[in-house]
Amino acid sequence: MPDKKSKILIVEDDLDIAEMLNAYFGVQGYEVVTVNWGEDGVRTAGNERPDLVILDIRLPDIDGYEVARRLRSDRRTKKIPIIFLTEKRDRADRLRGLELGADDYITKPFDVQELRLRVRNSLERMGQGSLTNPVSGLPEGMLVNERIEECLEEKEDALLLISLENLEAFRELYGFVASDDVLRAVSLMIHNAMREVGSASDFLGHLTVADFVLIVSSETIAPLSERVLNRLEQSLDYFYPIKDRDEAVNWPNRLSIKTAQISSRIGDFQTPEKIKKELFRLKK
Figure: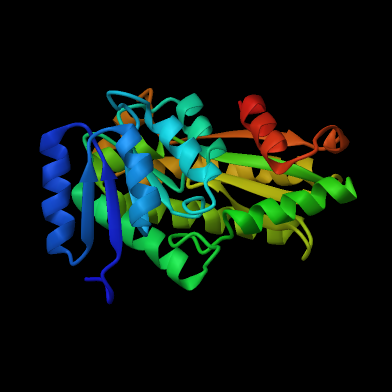
């Protein structure tokens, strides 16, 4: 249980889910406030100043994206961590949440134990002022944005996006412990490839949980991309249990890697948000 009573605001219109989460997190030692409408969520966040918001995207009045936008535009609530609770899984939806400053996503039907750990990790990051991912230990959030801003100013380095596709589908099959093991292993393999091919000044961090950004020299981005891609593609099958390994090769939602890179047009982008959006657009 948390040392102090952190306050969680739950914005969820499904009364059964809202009641279950209220009771569950109450037993875990949190102070819980529940509302069922988006407008109530915005108002309650401003009045109650919760430590974290669990926010459903589909709400009966304004959607969760609009709630998040308003929270991020209010100085009283702009730094509150937001975990989206949603049935949507499309990359475009996740990208929209990323642009709005969402801290995490979890899809329905969800594992309440996984949600508890995500809540705990988000609160710990806020409490400790940490800017690293609790699973991989790599930089994320503001630290990544600052490094991208430096890259845009210098216009010398290149950016490489390495996306671990279908991690959510893997998590749904095997649980969050197994998916965290995959994330740690992938981050380690990328780091080792950078150490072999790159230089000490290269940077590795998270754009989202499953999307890594590498900032490297323009000269090494091609060989580094090839090495990372080959190494990861050769390893992904081994994350599956032996009983599923042969079949998983043909699954449409199996773990896979997609990449994107920007090396010659750095000067075309003015903000980290614009270059991140372009990286996601180029991903293949």
